[in-house]
Image (cartoon, rainbow, N blue to C red):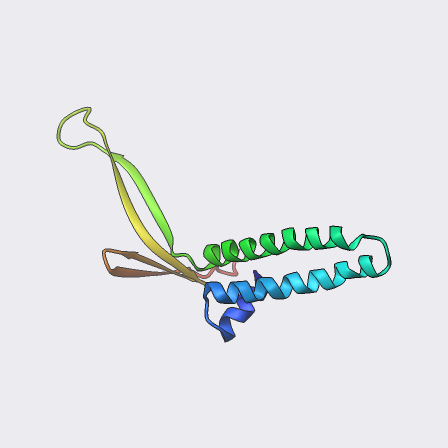
Length: 125
């Protein structure tokens, strides 16, 4: 995730960027693993099988990590309320898109954005 975060600043936050980062990390890990083949500790066919499995895992993991990092998060509030009739409870849901940047929380609902800032803690106790 950290390598992707660095690359997405210079490239674009796209699936292709995640694939490039995944291939870079996979290549580094396979260079390390190739030492076992060179020293005779692992047969080449087992190394090839492991490399193929790792490649699939790295590519899939890179895309899942990109999705988790780039997706738009949503905050769902659910509460029960009682209309004018007794014992007629209903569940109401409010959905907010949110983005958290350092000490600022941005809540968006129906194309209206509200900004909330964290109050600094006082030093006196």
